[in-house]
Image (cartoon, rainbow, N blue to C red):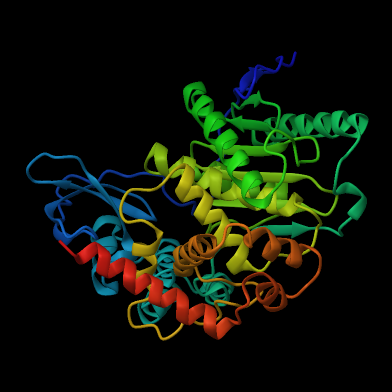
Length: 434
């Protein structure tokens, strides 16, 4: 029996299925780890604010770690990629001891690829992986091909333009029933306990606690309004076919199984993905991160991809625009700890002449460039929030992004990069002034 709608809240519906947990070979560790006894790493870091913190790594995952100060203050969440590459490599090997384990060394290589300076270190890890297990040659080659790319939204199937725009009530009801049936299928095939929650625009299927889902509902409603108002759409409407379907898993291994078995997607190197279908449906999935804030940030980021998929037309939006808007909204609704987007982008761009290789390509934005794309979106909105919908509408109407940029902001790529980097320099100087 499904629940009734209650405003923007997500309420539980259906029943929980509790069956035995199935495991995969060589799956990665759980979302968060505590260093083993005797694995003590002490660091002294200077935060973006200028504060110097001396402390110990008390928790870590594949994205970053928590540095707990020696004086007992609140822990600081830092990314591995903010460390020099040799430190990242050395600390991970100390904590995980991957030597001699081909699968663990392959994973290390993939992690090192995410670092701007990680190419050589990743290759060394891949070579060790092949020495330990020569059968991994195909997996290593696939990892090399990915070469640090971020996991952008996936478009699946052939676009049916009739499924965009306002849909009639009968189709919306039928679509919602299909989404709930997919949840039942996921429960059945994954054989884990999942609860299904509904709100007017979202269906959330998860094994996380109900209080977490309630908070996601509030944040998703806030994010929906923020994107809609930014693009000049109805903040109280529902852009989705049926609803936006979101899966959140406690354990990363279940997330990987879900993507492989239900979406035919290899998600070993991702923490969250949005699948936008040519028939108009949107499926989002992610796994729990080290903190509640980070988990919510990823959910909001992927939701924005879903909104962009449904906005105006099924036309492709280049990664730098799509990831930029997703990261900007996620920072507005659920900002991660640490510096804002301008500060993060300035740090990422140290030593770079432009915005990094391939930044303006249609696809394949590097993972380290996401903060830059988010900061660039912030800059465009700062220049003119009224012109941003003109940029997005132009792209969604089939114009190339360069043409749409010229029509909206009267800039080409060279001028955009020049002015953006000047803005980052000004922001950095403002932060350093007493």
